[in-house]
Image (cartoon, rainbow, N blue to C red; front, side, top):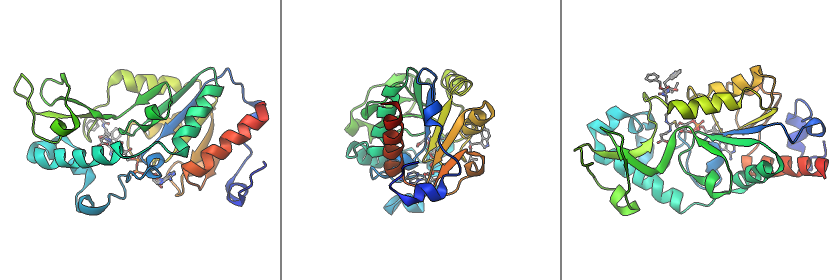
Length: 255
Ligand code: BV8
């Protein structure tokens, strides 16, 4: 493997069979908060500043919202502001470029920041929703709000409080979205799992499912995760560094 960067040789437990890859067979990219960290967006594990004293598991929950809706809305407003000031990074862009080389591809993200879509990726499955959408806490109607309006308490015509249209801890994922994600891993040939601690279920089941379905699974994460020992290749690297190199390697093979 022609890596210019020695870390890849050290960590690559096996060669990526890029020369055997069929561009007509599906490829899936599964991502978590880590892929957005190089865009300056803190992951759940390392909330920065004022928010570090709060437990994200509580802020991102129905009970947390019911007990202090203004605190939760402030948290989302702060995250939304950081996201609006952020740009997709080289990792997001490499995935978008990879998708263009395959007849069938899919990004399945746990992130709610919308950066994959901004980077030109399609299709994208947002397992946990999108921070820029809003819905009624009671009747789930979609509600249009400006960024400024979204930081305040708003009420639906049914009287319910308006909340971010994201999946909180203890809430079920949208059935169709989850079904589409698990369907996609039934027959994908290469499955990338990038920037996720692989601890949030049912999303974290996807890499294991892909492996069970004979996909070649590549993990990119500076840290070891519960999935690392199951991956065919586990790169201890930043997404913004590894993914562009993997893209160049693959592009060179097919050109
Ligand atoms: C549910 C939206 C049914 C909100 C989020 C088994 C089955 C089903 C459910 C459960 C189960 N066991 C437990 C549960 C309950 C729970 C759960 O998983 N708990 C965990 C703590 C065990 N799951 C749920 O509640 C789910 N609901 O299953 O419904 C149900 C109903 C009732 C009761 C039970 C079940 C809903 C989960 C969705 C929660 N919502 N997000 C919001 O964003 O505000 S999840 C949230 O966590 C984000 O989506 C985020 O993506 C995710 C955190 O995980 P990661 O993405 O992995 O991010 P993290 O910070 O953890 O790690 C970052 C990684 O990046 C690190 O590994 C780091 O090393 C790496 N990294 C850093 N820099 C880089 C990098 N990698 C590459 N490059 C870099 N530069």
